[in-house]
Amino acid sequence: MNIINFEAALIVSLAAITVTTLVVMISARLSQKKQKDEIMGDVKKYSDLSKDATDIGAKGIYAAYQKQGNERLMDYFVAIYKEAVVELALHVLTLGILQKYYSVLVIHFPFEIWLFGEGVGSITWYIVTGFAFFFLVIKRLKPKVKYFRPYWV
Image: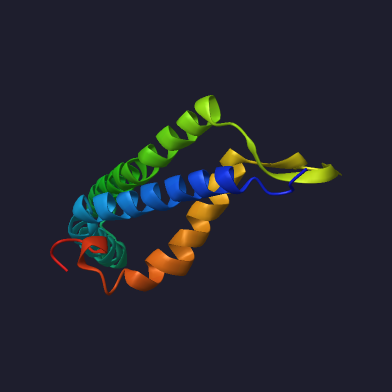
């Protein structure tokens, strides 16, 4: 019996590499970096203004600036949430498809190992391959490949 199912490893690895590359390209096109930088500038401005209001003892003005700063901070969190949804949606869809239609053991252990059981399945293999590809390849190519960067950079 083979320990490694090479066909399954190749199929799942190709899926992880393809989806990771697509996600990086799509998230670069839909990036909200400009908007997030703008929002953080506003948050800093309101923070400085509220500090000045505290220094002069104007509690009402302080509260107004704090409220405006908090609202802008909420806008920042919404922008981060939108980016996270875009980046994770394709991976979650692919993992669901793998679990439903291609749930196999990629690495079979001759004995059971705690946390892994009798082997490493396609889902775990996909996650490990996706992370490895991102950190070993995409992260290094990002500054060099224009499709991996936002269009205005």
